[in-house]
Image 1 (cartoon, rainbow, N blue to C red):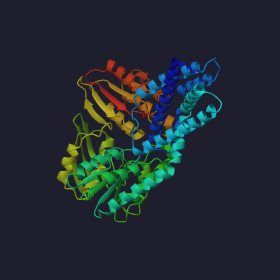
Image 2 (image 1 turned 135 degrees about the horizontal axis):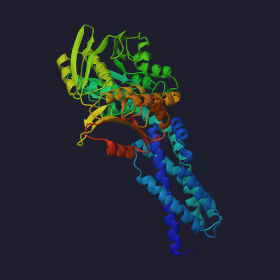
Image 3 (image 1 turned 180 degrees about the horizontal axis):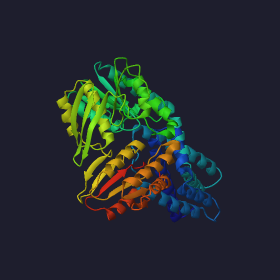
Image 4 (image 1 turned 120 degrees about the vertical axis):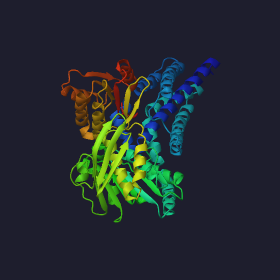
Length: 535
């Protein structure tokens, strides 16, 4: 038997190790949630991030192995593990994340399964040790086991997701059937699907604002653009008197949009863009095109497709199953509706939508060609649904900028901010830089980590992005390491000797650099903000 002091040390050590294990489980589960609870995506993140061999895990493995060395007393091993676990747990528990774990019922089920698996593993260890050794050895073995579980937590989270697969499928099917029944109970409901490599969220918001002048409208909130997000929207927000349902449809692999269409049966579909977004999962631009057009292909013969001909992969795609209206800002051929007389100012944009014998002059506080393009799509659908022109004009003028999507504001210090931090892409980032380049009242800053999920074109497109930065700004601050080499190479190729180029490890550091240099009248573009799954 050992003294109360030794027993206290053992208990404290065991608690530290257990808390560290649970804290790491929560972080791993957060990453699993950001990868849509799909083990194959989670494994891809592990390969790209190197998290399985991260410095803290390697240190934890070393500590666990060192603790097994006979130092004359198990107490020294417990103390060693406790010191490591306390430091690691403190870091994990107080770390700030851009997109923290959301404790949904599904997360609670997975977390509970992870704990059960861990308890079973620890129980097996305790049973084996208890048969041959005393209580001290059992506590020591539990601490070592928990440290090893911390090091191999990825296996625990993926195993839990796999075990719960049939359960989640049954739960999702129940929710799916309930949502389908709600939709069937509103036979006159007009369902509008909105998809695209980019621009779909903004288009959804603009369309909702315009149609709300004439109809009772429900749209999928935030980024609820998966099948489960749509199901949740219908079950929790759909009312019997809803007249129009605007459904944003996202995809990371083939058939994702088809699955949503099979549930909601859209009569109108908008395709805002087909570009090299999510090439990491889609592999080819042809797969992106095929997936986005799953929406158009699902439309009935008396439906309506509204597609953006500014993108070659849309302009070259025939649509034979339904009526198709093609719109554009830059394209000049094959258009049914076009934005003309586009003029930007510090107060916003004026432009006209022309097509089918109609000219509609509009004014908006939004800026940028991408926003004008998204507004054209929304206006075309509104006119098709019979919204009066005066209501369209009023709504467009009152539309507010969608947060982090080319959002313009001015700080109390007189610095202009262009916030385009949400999900940067090759087309949108080029447009944002064009807007920045047009700001001539002061110096122009860009703060960016570059673009992600571009597959084999990752380096090439970020290099092109850097080259455009070199021609458009006065101060460039490149954040992080993920795209730094490509962006800096592109900036260098622009041959702009007056451009000040800085690098920062974090956005906080980049912000400090900008504040130290920017003055009233300067303009700062925030282009993209990488999620926690990227470094």
